[in-house]
Image 1: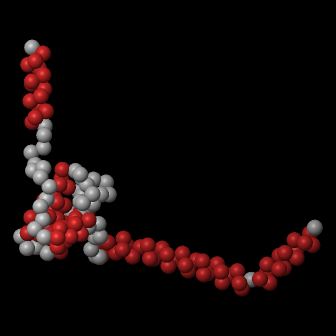
Image 2: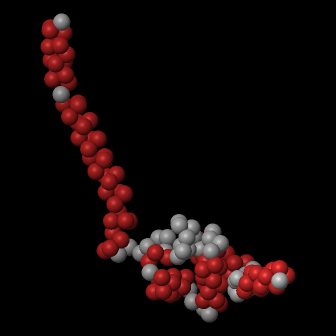
Image 3: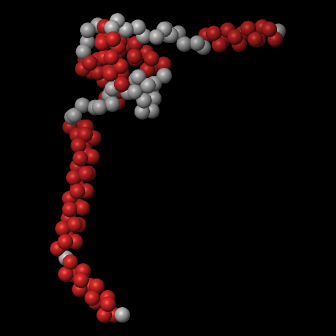
Length: 146
């Protein structure tokens, strides 16, 4: 009886194995390999937290890497491959989203914050330079009180 239970548990473990092809990707040339690595480094794993397709070990990332290589071999350029993935998974899949009206703040927001900070600092410095006489009179008033 115990042997039968052990065999049943072992058979469930056999069915739990992934059915995908575990063989590593084979490249036809070093140029293809370099293009592949550059492309998957720019794509985000759709399941992971802030990992690229190249870094992730999730099963969907493995599948997407195989699909990217297949699309490359079909003759699609990088823009077409990215567009295919965006249509399938949304713009989340891109580490560098396209410059559009809805991503304008994402692209130019940090520069605007830096510019605003520079204006505030320049205004404070200008105000400080223009009022040295006021600072001297306030210092002399403090000395008189003592």
